[in-house]
Amino acid sequence: MSAAPGGGEGPAPASTGLEADPEAEAMALIELLADEVGPRRPTSRNEGLAALLLRDRLRRRGLGAEVERFQGYASFGYPFAVIQAAALLPELLPARRRLARSAIALASGAALASEGSLRLTPLSRLLSRNRSGNVVATVEPSGPARRTLCLMAHMDSSRSGLIFDPRFVSMLGAWISLQSVASLAQAAGEPLLGGSRRGRQLLRGARGVLAAGLLLLIEREIRGEDVPGANDNASGCAVAAVLAAEAAAAPLGSTRLVLCLTGCEESGTLGSQAFLDAHGTDGWLFLNIDNVGGPGSVRYLRREGVLAKWDADAGLIAAAERVAEADPELRLLPEDSPAGLTYDSSPVLARGGRALTLSVQDGSIPNLHWPTDTVENVDPGGVSRTLRAARGIVHEVDAGTADPR
Image (cartoon, rainbow, N blue to C red; front, side):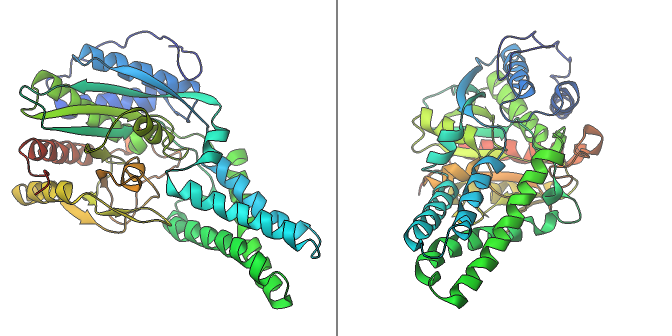
């Protein structure tokens, strides 16, 4: 199979004959993405191939799927390496050049705050020079559309590195927070404290943290390897695609269902941001599905984010609570301190939208951004329970459970 980088035509996949068994179809899609396509780094040839194969599979299942193109880049490390390098520059300038040192420090802090907002991201837009795409399809309801629900999942996969080593990955959130605090301290401290000896000592400590972070980003790019991404996130992609195919066969009563399988999630939720920019999504509901191939509990994330924190939509939480109460075997539980960093739902929430993420995790995500994220390490039980939980939430939304009161 072949395709041009980030796109191009490819052969239609053969039917697996598993369409009558949703769980088996989901597992077949996971195998297609993680084994047959393999690692799907953002903007890579394999990410483009995955988009075409998913588009064609969805078309065979009755959905008018299209690939919507946008520009992106290959790694979340790119903008943050630029920001951290800029934050270190004042240390290289003579102390007498306080104005220049302060201006550079403030600019690096402003860039970090901007990128972290997931709303105004000029540095990301500047770096976005390669082609990516989202796979998008719409299923109209059988009656008048009273609401729109978008199922989201990302089809790209990440890259390993020391920061994702299983021995250290549980500390990732704290490390990212420390990096952010050091960068903001540097931005504010240089103008305020840079003229005193003690102030310069404090700033050197902050820059030491930033230098360590920059070295880890460089190590990831040089020594890391692109991972198969069976759990993260072929699993979520498969669940969302199966649910959309079910809706195409039996449309919802009053809910328009939109499927968005994003590219470039692993480089900073660029696909989600591009989708929101391209579509009038005011009032939509978003159900995001990410990392659902583990053996743990199916969690609905009531809060997410790293520096900025956003609350999930109350109506979707209410729908999840009703599903959990109706079927305790799903092990569908709330989570206020999720593992991982941002999700495709994060840009929705950052813009004041209505979203909720489902993820199978009990304090950690198995094989996160590691070469062991393979099909063999996916738990079919986690995929099956998420499929049932997400299906239940979709039908609760269609029944009006998440509607504003």
